[in-house]
Amino acid sequence: MRISQLSAASGVPIPTIKYYLREGLLPQGEVTAATRAEYTEAHLRRLRLIRALLEVGRLPVAAIGQIIAAVEDESLPVHQMLGTAHYALAPPVEAGPDDDHRRARERVDALVAELGWSVHPEAPTRDELAGILVRLDQLGMPASEESLRVYASIMMRLVSEHEMHKIAFDGPREAAVESVVVGTVLYGKAFDTLRRLAQESESARILGA
Amino acid sequence: MRISQLSAASGVPIPTIKYYLREGLLPQGEVTAATRAEYTEAHLRRLRLIRALLEVGRLPVAAIGQIIAAVEDESLPVHQMLGTAHYALAPPVEAGPDDDHRRARERVDALVAELGWSVHPEAPTRDELAGILVRLDQLGMPASEESLRVYASIMMRLVSEHEMHKIAFDGPREAAVESVVVGTVLYGKAFDTLRRLAQESESARILGA
Image (cartoon, rainbow over all chains, first blue to last red; front, side, top):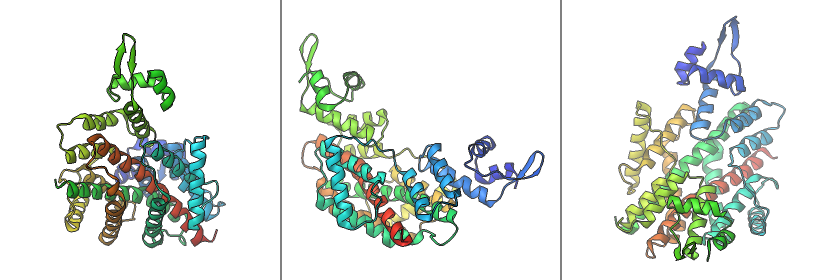
């Protein structure tokens, strides 16, 4: 299809498509004449992924660039490629090097070890959770080890029983990353939304409103 | 304590504290002399809440202002006050008035009705979930009714068995809102972080990395 058709099919304006082409987020079309290029279903799908990451995932363009570079770099082993995409999706961590943060990080490391989870020792997700634990302590709503264990086991059940089989590990690498990205960002938001609906309902029930 | 002590105890610079005072996010101190005001533990706690909402919740100042106005407006019934805070915490919804969105919204309404949840008919959370379902459809990873039911029941168990008893419904209204806000934002992030740790671990296990 031509760029105008790609724009109509995706709902993305032509100048924006050209911006994505310049930034390397979208691969160039096949040049069929001096002023004409052909685009495919793959371009359409990539455009939808970019828009979903921007609008639903609210990721900055730089992070989207990292994810797409990982998809396209075929020399990267699959687990590492998925890790690159996965870490880019995480919010930036402001790891305080202070004692509170160090203690919270030790709690996270102990929890991961106790659960027997395979998580990279340098995974930024560890510091992210530690930062949240520090905040909860400061606000007087600390998370106990017992609570963390319960929450972790609920999340692991959700991931292993209901999420992981949706990842196309044995298909093309682009499909695996896409499903990880969509699963991490969009299903993450869906779970958070369902949790907030449940909270409203429970609040209404308890307060009898 | 004086403003300099409040700054030292909270780690928030004095000009920032003065900005929060001007914006009404932080109540004025008790004036004890022409150029001097006294601040209390309540100010310190409020400052920590503001910083947590800004830095962990990443909420704009306007949304923080809404939450704090709901805390301070004693004429607002508790469930409504909590709802105001709760809705302000939600990301802005770009509700597409198109057919896809309408169909997705009907699916959400049917799900909420089937579950018997008490959720306001106009709750923005409904449109938020509908928007996510539209994206998942567009990206070729649709969420089935069966999956949504499973996810909803996992989230309801999490909320009713492990979260709601932490809300101080019978204490002062400020404490109830604070715990709802902290619970919604910070525990939401903790769950999302635990989910991503579980995903990394399951990915490593499945790929044998």
